[in-house]
Image (cartoon, rainbow, N blue to C red):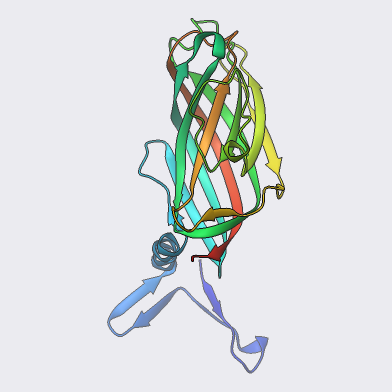
Length: 220
């Protein structure tokens, strides 16, 4: 892909280039993208090195957009018997800063149960959401803590034969600003399963894309 350089004399003097040479170094579009991702990771944060998880970061000043690609990302599910079940996987580590989240979009295209999750029934019923804290105890298909869903509101999923899809679009939530100044904030994918359908400690594999937009407000 070419880059356009606009001359100050007007659009008729635009020049399209495939590479830029600086001394003996030639930089192409892929190199620029890699440099941008490295710089953005320093200024915004980074995803952990987790199998099935990748993240691209777009940045405009202090505004950011994170796009996560989940490919059978494994979420460890802990069965709490009559209390239901729970699981969480970290998606991102932010730099130290206050953060205002502006919205998110989650598009889940596939789920796969671990072999023992529902005793072979393939009918797991759960809610899934995005928050800055991880769910830490079974809550019978509820993500009740505000910070468990303060980035992406919960979405209910009921598997049929072990499969399902779903999407959730979340605008700005009335939760104020997340204070990540003393301790940097994290982003988690949270799952809370129903006591009626999940029968054992196992895993849930999640496939899809998640986009999160926000603004860094600075560190103390």
